[in-house]
Image 1 (cartoon, rainbow, N blue to C red):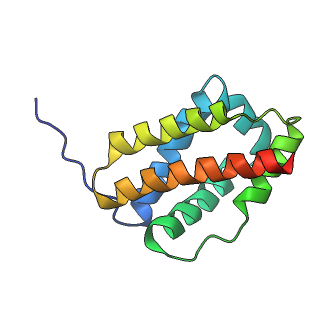
Image 2 (image 1 turned 180 degrees about the horizontal axis):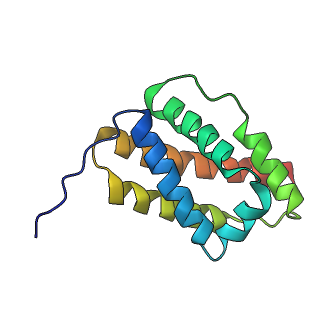
Length: 130
């Protein structure tokens, strides 16, 4: 059996694949799925927004226009202040698994590192907002 050769994240198409595969796992997740399904009304728009976000993070593309801190604070408020660090840990684990499943290389490593920092930053800002 041949080992599948993975490549690094090279372009927007790879970012789109990452985002769609990742959110497929999120939507099936026992804890995270119901939160996301309650908050996201249009998944295609969400995929596009998050592809813009991660393309901006990985390629400095300046396509993302938004404020993830305010969005996540609003999510926490809507679900009565119940977002916990465990949720971000579960999110991060799925992100890392998806990256390992699909890619390898420098940008994949950057995507892992940025996600760790983003998860921590978002939770700290949510907690401070309470």
